[in-house]
Image 1 (cartoon, one colour):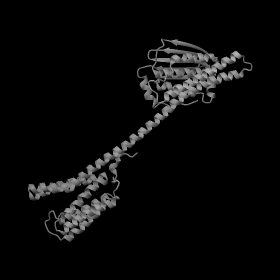
Image 2: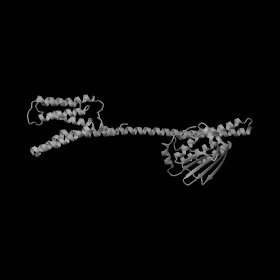
Image 3: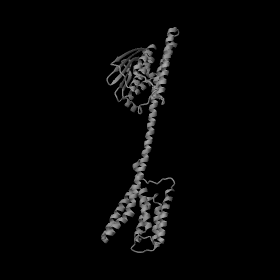
Amino acid sequence: MSDPTSAWQRPLPLRLPGLAPPIRRDCAIGGVVLAGALVLLATHSYVIWSVWNPSPWLRLPPLLLLFVAECHRSTSPRFAVFLAIACASVEMVLGPSIGGLIMWSDVLYAACLYGTSRLAFRLLYGNVVALVVGAGTVWAVTREFRLFVLSIFYIGLVGVSPVLTGFSVREHREKAEVERLRATQTARLAELDHQAAVVAERARMARELHDVIANHLSAVAVQSTAALSVKSLDEARLRETLEVIRESSLQGLTEMRRMIGLLRSENTPEEPVSVPRLAETDRLVEHVRRAGLIVDVEVIGVARELPTPVDLAAYRVVQETLTNALKHATPQELRMVFAYRTDDVVITGVNGIDPEHVTRLPGARAGLVGMSERVSLLGGVFEAGPRAGRWHVRAELPCGDDVVRGAENNASTGPKGGTG
């Protein structure tokens, strides 16, 4: 993106639809003024004032050269100004004409508008100096106040006024250019925000899909593998295994329907969509116990209702911890501790998962990444790793009043989630 402040350092061509190229437009403008000047020249009504009466033919070359300067007013402002200054000097000797002054003023205006900032400021300073010197000379020679005021008005009208007008138009164009660049930048930022929101939504959906599908399918896989590994399985044990598999499948379908309901935009207050809560983890614990995992649960403090984002994150952390222990823990034991403190809730899980086993499995850390992201989006702390020969998982979730607002702010800038 170009720097708007550098626009003063380059010509600003007028690019409006329906206009001819600049050189043709400049020639057309100069031609109209020249035609008017020639008409005045033919009728002998062209001189503003003159101390002598030169031949009209002597006035024709300066007018033609001013026309050449007009043809280069926007494409070569510096050349046009130098040529116009030379012609204006001759005009002043012969006596200024109306057509010459019009073309001179237009060249000054165009040089300030299309030329560089250095040229524009030099023209401004030069005409101000000419105004002071000219008016001072008239006062020093004539000592007539009327002529002094007329000289100020004349030089200001044909010299300073076109330059100031060019500055004013250029400033407005600069502002329009800056606003255009700002609008482009705003649109670009809005597009980037949209892309970030899409990425964040995809990451959230990836975490939900992992929690909903992978966990329940893992339980199904564990139970079916255990059933297939036993050659002679009694009917009661087989039925119990199939019931666990059926229950895991139904729970997975229920969770999937719940997630689809959350993603539906047609939801109305008459169709509320429930969100998993930490209080519902008893069902998860009972389910993995039936699958063969020994779970010891301890609650410290008084259980209370948590903010919805915290409840959902805590539920998913417990769900992932139970699933990982069911799949990888040896022996099949897990100790869960729920500590309800004043400003947060701490979930701790300790099991016998072999750390080397975790690193060997492809995609085994996807669940850990998802748990870490859920906790970090709420401004909490997540730790997972080996300690004293056992695998420890600890999630500290804040429960302050600003949790919901912080979760919404972090969701658009949070890290990407992985699936596994």
